Image (cartoon, rainbow, N blue to C red; front, side, top):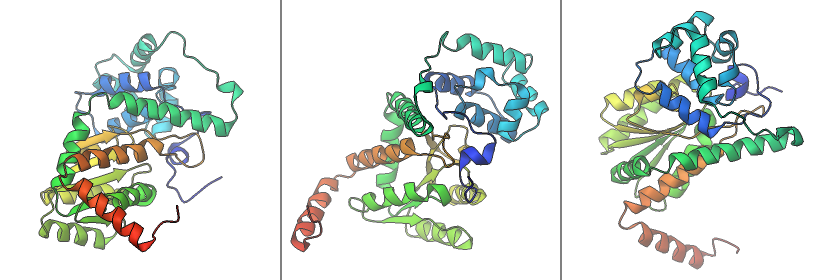
Amino acid sequence: MSGDGDNGGAGEGTRTGTGAVDAGTAARLQKLFEGHRLTPTQRRIAHCMVRRAADAPFLSSVELAELAGVSQPSVTRFAVALGFDGYPALRRHLREVAPAEKPDDSGSYNEYQQAVQAEIDNLRHLAAALADPSPVIEAGRLLAASRPLPVLGLRAAGAQAGGFTYFARKVHPDVRLLDEGGTLLTDRVDAAVRAGASALLCFALPRHPREVVDALEYARAAGLTIVTVADSAFAPVAHHTDLLLPAPVGTGLAFDTACAPMLLGRVLLEAMCDSLPDAQARLEEFDAKAVARGLFVE
């Protein structure tokens, strides 16, 4: 089964059986990569390993290179950049720090149930990341203060950006959805900056469109602070982001599943409301008007 090329799992190489992300292994991988100056190719490898966290300790250098879409020597150089003698030493390290026995009851699930279980794992990973709420609180403050607030999301991320914008408009006085690429995208960034915008929220999901990377680079150069919800801390947009909030996606189906990025968007809405003193009043005003207009049937 194939789509239009936006599905991250099918676009990057082979599909795993479950697409599940082991939250503990993914967290250890991200910590291992932090603090190293990685090239774009090496960040691509790191991104792939985080997304395939459960399988990473068992992949050969050839398999990892194929999954990441890089050469096998690039994998070796990546391991050396992390301080290991080579990829075998990196893999041994990953196996040593991995759980001694990873629970695996996926054999009792069909592929649809496995996809749901993968998303449950992703949500657990997100919950663990939110144990420190300070990045989300800071993001909420930045988004609340930006007037207007541009929200960028192209292709697969369009639904996330659109959903955030729909609800944000109920509490924020000026939210502008940027969901079309091309030359109009830079025009709309320019218009937001001229109107007084100070921050931009981006939803970036695989496969990552080049237009999004270019737009973030342009927006940052224009003076906007970039807050990004992405599938990994090593996503291609990371280099052009001031505050990146990772939320993993599932890759077990033909098209990626993005429950964690959607939920993180709602968490950001909550944090933004906490920084908007009139948010509750705006919601109550909307509810009153909705009742007067008979807007909803329930």
